[in-house]
Amino acid sequence: MNEDEFQNPFVFKTDWKNAFEDKEFVQVFSSDILENYIINKRWYGGKASTLKYIEVVDFFKIASKANIYFGVLLEVNFKEAFYQHYFMPLAFMPENELDTNTIIAPVNMNGQAGFLVDALHQEDFKKLLFDKIVNAKEKSDSIVKFHKGLKLEEKEYKTSKFMGVEQSNTSIVYNDTLVLKIFRRIYISMNPDYEISRFLTERMDFKNSPAYMGSIGVVLNDGNITLGLMQELVPNQGDAWQFMLGEVDKIFDNLKNKKISIKKLPDIELFKRLKINEVPHEIIDWAGLSVFMRIRTLATRTAEMHIALGSDVHETAFTPTTYNGDYTVWLKNRLTYQFQNRLNILENNLHKLDGLALELANQFLDHKKEIRKIFLDFDWTKMKSERIRIHGDYHLGQVLVNGDDFYILDFEGEPESTIRDRKVKQPPLKDVAGMFRSFHYAIYATIFNNKDKYPFDQEELFKAGEILFKYFVGVFIQTYTDVAQGENLNIGYRKEIDFLLKYCLLEKAVYELGYELNSRPRWAVIPLTGIASIMEFKN
Image (cartoon, rainbow, N blue to C red; front, side, top):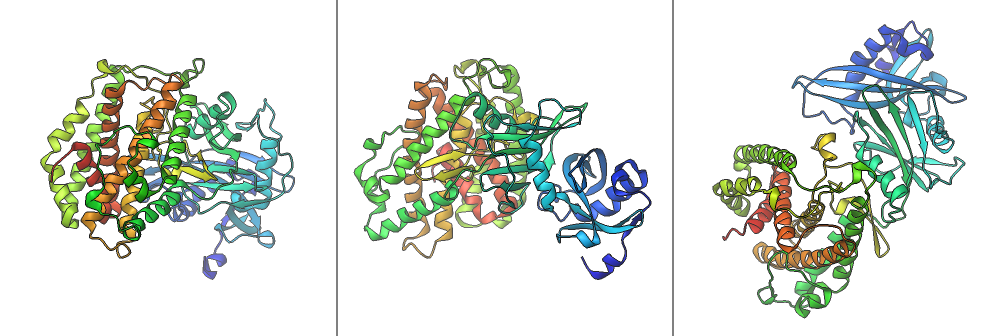
């Protein structure tokens, strides 16, 4: 913000404590002030669309001993005829008390000069949220409700700091033991992250996701909105994506260091089940034993997560259910729409591709009828397994490494989906397929990011990568199936499992294709290779 803007504050007749009762303030705030501020924020999800207007749909007042704050619920309307909701906590800081450079605008409130700021940058406000959760009572008359989780033992506020880079949410770490995630983009419905986190902790006592500690919500006539989720801070050594990139890099280094002949590596078909002692010694010699042990642990935790999500017979949101016609219509509509969208993107971006990516893209276009047919061939009457609530956006980046173990986070669901679609019960194998696509990515990202490091041509590295991928999948699926079926999670028999895995892998790879073509066309070869391998196209 430059000096001139400080000279020209927005002037209002109202004082701060009555600001949102004042029509003129609300009008100027939502148009002149907010429109300029919001479009530059990382958490703002409308960057690809044209902003039409912003409306304050509701607000609540919340006060500490020293300050009054407002929680403001915004509806952002776009020219493309859709809208999004956001949550913004606001503070007014007189000039002499300003202690942040995250300023929304200079204002003069009934003669008092100061600044509108995002309240999350105020120490006093962060402490207020902590105290309200820790001391939450069951009953309260306010529309804003604080909830204290059964496992929350902390009583006293000591420190707070922001965690990582601000993404679609803002996370505050308290006392180095708790994280409060404030949802910036909100939905008039319970956030799945809150719903699943609380269920896993308080009803299922599931140990491998951060324990639910509390929440902040708003109760409106239209429904409940989750504004914040507090969980334990899990000590960790980073996420499983970074961990896997390191492992795969060592494996590719071994090709040269151990003088391994890629041609002689034993290949297997996709989805072949493998216990660790059944992995050929040539593969163990190349990749090492420890990576397969870790994959086995991750498969076990994934199965345990699904067992917890699918074993409650009382809470209808979490009761397993069978397949039916309604689900099939929902699924096919969704996938044919997505498939058509991806075809259009691919046809419009073919000129950005060359080499193998272009070859695979043309192959994809030549076989589009076959691929569409797979999506349409979903016959629910043959399904004997059950659908449950799932993670919905499961990949290595959603898993923390803690010593030899893994913790699963972020149950918000697939970012492109509506909140209703995220709560639809789906085959748990959809999460498994998401993890398999993530393995595939880790292998190819390693090849792309280190192409000058390994003394092999790309085709050989891709061949080695595909073989490695199938062994990762083989060990994972064997363990996952054993653990899930051992606890009576109904994932179907072998033929159905393979059908669902293929179906979900294809769906996931087609979904990724759109993302890559829009953001980094050079990587489109990864989902295209995945599609070719699932469809068993021959080069």
